[in-house]
Image (cartoon, rainbow, N blue to C red):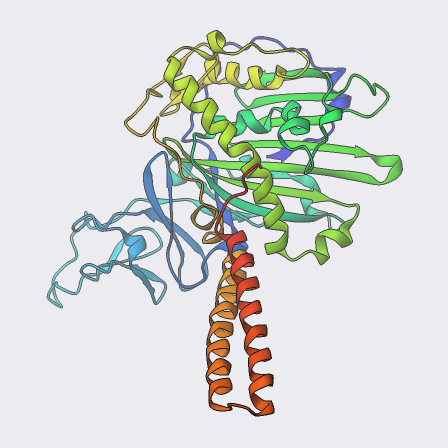
Length: 448
């Protein structure tokens, strides 16, 4: 599926009409798993979809394989095992499985014994597109590769991208609501993405609400001569904004992908793309860009967690809780109404007037940990390596400082002692600086 960015032309042709007999099946969809560059090369990669544990790895041909993360022998997690000659091996008893989930080796069986026919693991269709790994949630034979939400600009060499992945401690529908709400940017992200003085009413138009998703456009009412920005939600997990002033060469956008890992858990993938100021994208190290991207996400995190807590505490429909404005909340309401119309097949959801299996649990009102280390750094290849280097610099600096201090003691009264003391202090300073820098990979941003 190619994201069509020419909404302004279509807006004059399309009228929003109620649809009859449309169905949406969450299993007949593609879900993003990770950015290809963040996929470990020689070990299994674990994730989940609606609390179903899954594992991803490459076979001996380098082809991606996706299996249920459960050994049929004694239910151990395959992701805790290892890759052996392109097969995934369970570390409990050494059973090995191939690309289609078939069991290829059981060490405890006699050489001439036949492997049981039911000693297999369910497999899923998985592909790479535009630097993202996608899995099809239904039967492999029914996978429709044309339905992967492709952003056509990303196939053009003049566009550059920056990507960031993050685990969030709330449901996917809260994340999609958040990114379909442009009005919050000027307040919540004042000083990073927006400015408080720019918080003004917007003109928002919904062009389509169908089983495929929602399409719309928006622009500020105070600047009606500016081009429309375009918003598209492709069900169930992709939101795209595109903008541009073609006569000035300004064209870009941001794509938000997500996967519902389980209740109160989702993994998100944010991709900014542009064909202007490309030098800035190319020169900024990925780990440094992620510090800003994570701060932006963390500016919203406590607000959404607080919102979730209040909604669950009240136990009412969003229609009863929300007080939406047409000039700021149109797309948010339209998304929740989409869930009302088409969300019945989802394992759980929160719509505008309806909901399914989203009741509170024992963890609902406990403080939710915000941990950049586990929610991003350990998932990101670039930040993980930068974090390890920083940690090594700190450890080496501490060791050097101790050695130089010892040297200063031994060289009592000589010029070597002065040099050793100064060098030791310098090493201490470097260790302190490394420790402070290291916290940027570990701790979330907090407002002061």
